[in-house]
Image 1 (cartoon, rainbow, N blue to C red):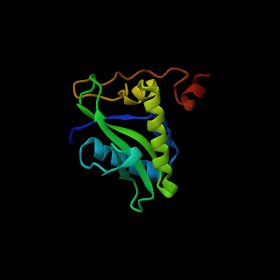
Image 2: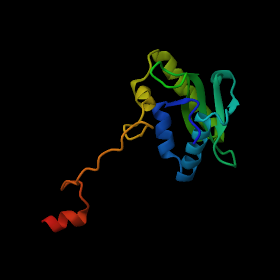
Image 3: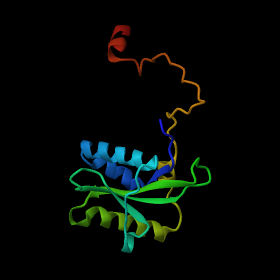
Length: 154
């Protein structure tokens, strides 16, 4: 498997966008993000208030879009640059672009990085690395055991 070329981070509201779109669109968006992180595509450059951003078409009908930025990754990252997901939504009436512009405007006025954005950048504790040992299997407790096992203990 090809290694990632970029890190990944997301505006916390963009993660909510992903949760709220239809399942098929979410799957396509995640696939596009995978392509972006691996450096297989870049999206189209945007202008005016979204200068510095790129738009990425999510579905074949180009009804759904993502707005992303390529930006320097934090010093703790394995990668010098990262993909930052700003917004996911419909193209209709420029909704996704207005949402992205509003988020970037709010982020610029606060000046400080959002702690939730930092959390969105962090790695999952469940993610395995090449040199990590496999987790030990834990014996199920009464609270985590399947319902059938809990009934048989009673």
